[in-house]
Image 1 (spheres, rainbow, N blue to C red):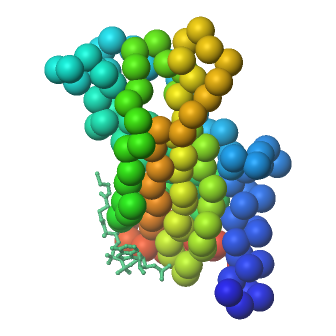
Image 2: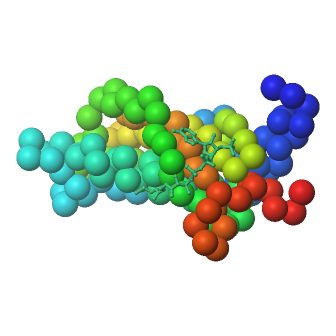
Length: 145
Ligand SMILES: CC(C)(COP(=O)(O)OP(=O)(O)OC[C@H]1O[C@@H](n2cnc3c(N)ncnc32)[C@H](O)[C@@H]1OP(=O)(O)O)[C@@H](O)C(=O)NCCC(=O)NCCS
């Protein structure tokens, strides 16, 4: 990675974390998996988890580019183990690359069973967001240089 790319990444991380970067990433969403979010088998529906991850990455992308951004791709989605009703679900986001108009954000989802003090990873993926102007066209991530 060039020095300029690294400087952009660092600038993006500062904006995206508001100083709250932890080893796992930035804790963007913590929520409880509810009965309404289940699949027919009674476990949590993967689509619900994907939407939470998209919300988490989108939230960080909006902070980084300080404006509107849209998901252009989701890569490497893996479901490692099921999420159960009542689990505490935590979404950590990590900005891994800043391009000219795009931001690659890795999201890790963890579950903590309701009455346990142990958490385990359940899902991860890379989300690529594109910064958009008012007309919905790509614009530079950093408009202020
Ligand atoms: C986002 C959108 C405006 C981008 O327009 P576009 O003309 O395809 O954009 P470009 O080809 O200029 O690419 C923009 C950036 O995305 C990157 N990109 C394009 N396709 C990509 C892909 N499949 N995976 C990862 N990055 C990709 C490009 O490399 C470029 O990044 P850079 O400027 O940092 O180098 C357009 O694709 C769009 O509106 N998509 C729908 C978005 C949406 O509605 N998302 C929600 C779905 S529910």
